Image 1 (spheres, rainbow, N blue to C red):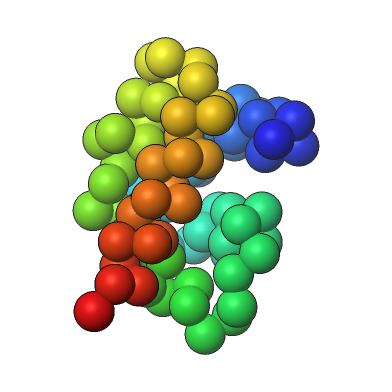
Image 2 (cartoon, helix red, strand yellow):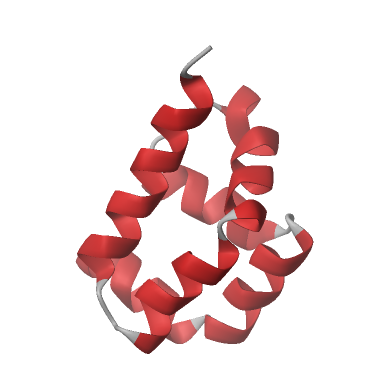
Length: 82
C-alpha cells in the first residue's frame, strides 16, 4: 500500500482524470498494483469509472488507502459474480 499511496498522492490530477474517462496509463498502473491480468484492464477501467466518486473520496478526501483498496477489491469481486 505504501507504493500505491505514494503513487496516488503524486499523481492525483491524472488519477482523477483517468477515473473520469475510464482510461489512460494510470489505469494500467493501478491494474499492476492489483495484479490484474492484462485482459481484465478494460473492465477494470470501467469499474473504476463507475465507482470513481467513492474511490476519489477514499483516496483523497478521507486519505484512507485501506478503504480505497477494499472498495476496488469489492468491486472486482462484484463484477466477477455472474
